[in-house]
Image (tube, rainbow, N blue to C red; front, top):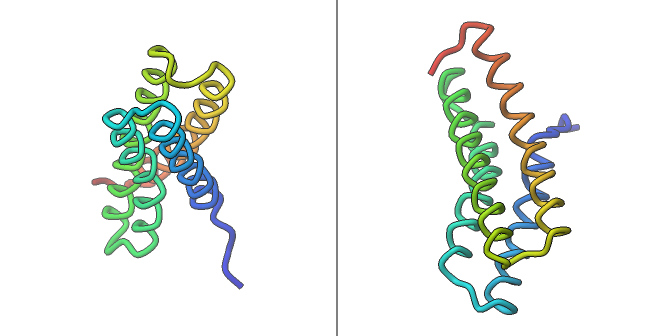
Length: 121
């Protein structure tokens, strides 16, 4: 039986939300430029977490998660920008931002733990 991976599970669900957001932005708002940005950064979080499962070393594992953290931070920017430019509602903004901040928190915790164990990039 495969061990539960909370980070992967949460980032995968977040990726689904981002894809649905992108569909909404293109269909309802006719917005394509910001749409491409948020789908790239928002879905790459889980892609990097997935890649980290088969990292070549502990340093590679840490590197993949550090890049995922950067992508999560960028995604927060796009979520805020979409809200501040009236593309998404306050409710949608708060919900997406909450989930993204949760991913950032998990990634910060994991990467700090790895660094404290002496694993470096």
